[in-house]
Image 1 (cartoon, rainbow, N blue to C red):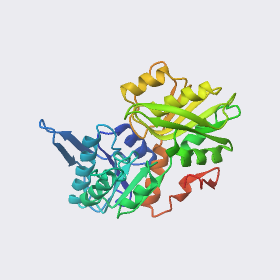
Image 2: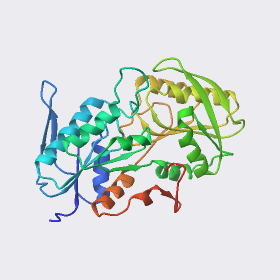
Image 3: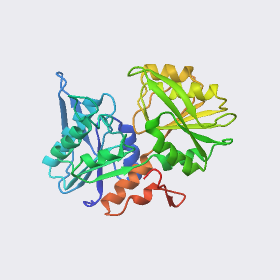
Image 4: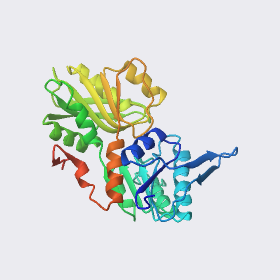
Length: 322
């Protein structure tokens, strides 16, 4: 038995992705019991020997966020107490990432709290993808490997026949990501300025850029209620956009989001399986696998190799995203 190779475990957040990752790494998915007591408390037992091993726990903290976060923390603690040599929390989606600053009085910085909890529970390293804000890496006092979905999305986008494409940021906050994709796809760039009317509603106001008669690619890191994307899409259609696609790294689709996509002028939503993605009846939804990306990162971390080449597209690093 190889005692130097990685071992991959998972909670209940996205076991299908964990199985894909383990298959790519070339190891069986580790056996662990992760259940809840009748009172809601989480129980974890790792059912195999991990003493002195390199452990990777795949667990996006998507809804139910608190449940999945507690599963991850308890699994890390169980692995630490079982004498694992190194424990890496593989978090394709990092929950609480939007609570990354104190933008009003008497509010927490929960993204920092989660970082503290991960380190305190015994994680030696975190592997994540497309954080809502890159500076969240600075909340950790342990190493963070931050990957990007761009290479996976780019491979799919390059297979589409897009006419006179333009990349659009659906809000001001996504401008840097949109600029990176426009550079990557050798297209021009536009932006939709918006005004949020509530936590679930957005009123788009004006467009900077010309989309008339062009195919449009909107890019964002996350959508939950789809208010920003669908409001921007309606404005783009009014301004003469021909075909509208949306590429989003993480999709946490609520019931209101599904209804909004069905009623929107968006022709296709492209996302990844960083979380379990609900289907949208009557709407074109494409879910791309990131198992190879994360699996390759695990193999390189385990072997003490660089992961920076995973940012490369067509042999070139995408400095816009980095």
